Amino acid sequence: MNNNEQHERNTRALGLLLLGVGAWILIARFIHIDVGSWLWPFWVIVPGGLIIALGFRDTHRSSKGLVTFGSIIAVTGIILFVQNITGQWQSWAYAWALLFPGSIGLGQYLWGKRAGNETEVHSGEKTMQIAAVLFVAFGLFFEVVLGIGGFHLDMASRIVVPVLLIAGGAALYIMSMNAGRKQVSPPQSRPQSTPVPPQPPARQDDSQDDIAQRP
Image 1: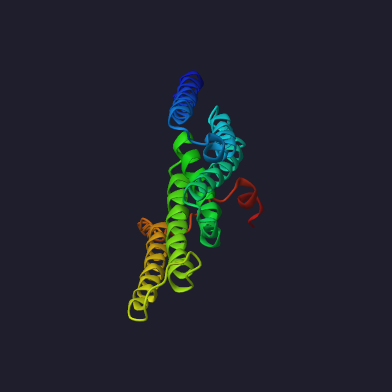
Image 2: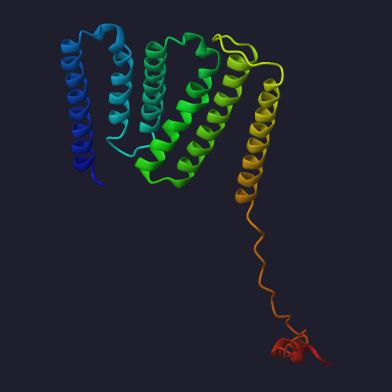
């Protein structure tokens, strides 16, 4: 895909985003929704998306930083949008896992897809998987065990939480072991060389000077 096609795709994506935001504002005016209290996180999401689009303009290595930085900003805005809707601001106690390392893994994944680098794609997928496990594990701990959001389980049901934590830890360990095995390639066998039989020493003919010096 050349730069012109990528620029057209970015323009279409931006147009769809503006179309969706405009439609939402128009609908909110008719049903009397306070748009400002709902859409202010888009002041964070949209710049993040624009930075990602700017990094997609070429496949130079320096553009990877733009894509990663844009992913961090966009994911921050998405988290704020969900928290603003639900009112669960205490979720920052475990939502940080989606930001770091989750957004960094997302940036690696997007850059790998854009540049056709499978190593970056696999690295980004692995980082996002780790972020998802951390998010779920810490979310269960803070929301279910500590009850920071007002949700509590009885004593019998709390057994489920450590079991899920153990399962998440085992899943992380298995994924890291499988990734390590894929990176270690088997040693290549060297071709055996055919033994060369010993050769008799070459006889040097007597030079004319040696013959002349003989008695």
